[in-house]
Image (cartoon, rainbow, N blue to C red):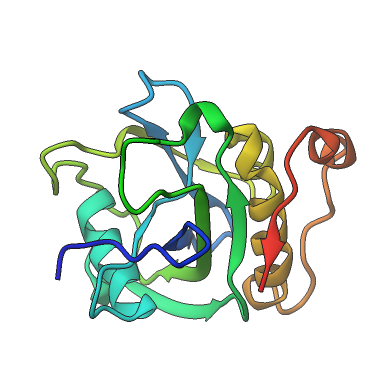
Length: 186
């Protein structure tokens, strides 16, 4: 049960985690494997025999050291959100060929604060640093080809995160989203 699932179109099944504090800020991790460049949400592949919710809690533990009991599952996106990898990131010598990711996004809220994060759950940690960010900020911080998926995931999850009214969109919203890449849904 350690092989990732790649569909017949070349998209790797994946879960994304929006980890939120009570005040509405969200967790962003700095990618260790990218040489400290790039901030993103925790995410990871769904393995054979694993359902998306099981993958969320496994990835939460592996990437940030939290257990299922540390968080409350608030909601998830209704559909898969897809992005294609730019050609320079496609590993052409891998089989099956993976051309992108299809992601189901989950909104988790911390049960207690402060949280203690531990990035040593795997031999190659995903993150080397972390910070709290305002709810919409990750759309601007993530690598360009994931921006539309982040926008769609946060937009869909915002009513669950903020049932009495979501935060206003930032002034940079439209400009950042005009840059490159289009996600697909199925």
